[in-house]
Amino acid sequence: MDWDLFVKLYIIFWMFLLGSVMGSFLDCLADRLVDGKSPFHGRSHCNTCGHVLLPRDLIPIISFLVSKGRCRYCKHPIPKECLLSELVMALVFLALGLKIDMDSSLIMYAIFSCVLFTITIIDWKTHIIPNKALVVLLLNRLFFFVFFEGITVNGILQIIIGACCVSVPMLFISIGMDYILKKESMGGGDIKLLFVIGMYMSWLEMLLLIFIACVLALLYFFFISNKDEQAEIPFGPFLSGAWFLVFLFGERFLQWYQSLLF
Image (cartoon, rainbow, N blue to C red):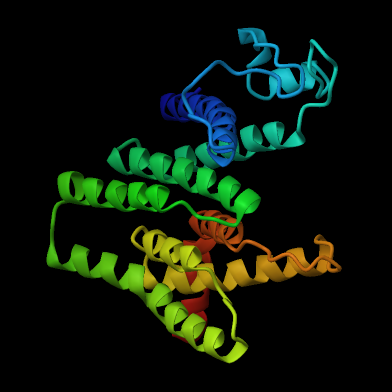
């Protein structure tokens, strides 16, 4: 086997494993934050019977499949969200390992994806995007920009343009819609999330991201959600999903689109 291929497969394996572990941890972390509990207090336990989980109960993906999605102690169904979180983050980390070289940017995007995933879960359950999580995303980008990429005028401009190209127009559109509809049309947390995501992306990628996020939200509304419900649909999860799609396919799509124009 080619040595470079072996190294790549080795990295991919560990990224998938690390992602599944982080998915399990972040799902638990988000649940505790939603419930107002300390995220680091107490061991993992069954939410139904309260039994403390042993290491064999905490193996990502495998434990859920072996137990057939039920608690080994009380046989109560384990929320499928646990398995989904582990699979999603495993795939995200797998994509990071495939798309990014082993350098500082891999660490930056790993931190970014973990915080973004936590925001997604919290926003889905509470319709609130925590400001503290947004600050972590902002500081993460600035830290790696200052200490690893190097401060340049061009780099600063790219971050500012990426952060503002969609978030600022959406802010003014939201203010106008709020005035017309006499109610909140778009949460301020979504606009702040667009701002910090934009710090990691180009302005073209951000335009593609907001388009994909809107399409995903419409598809969810028409084909998945219960349209009889009057509850608002959080937009943060769709922004996160759009980021992942742009991360995977955005560059290739933009190159194809620009080739049509020029």
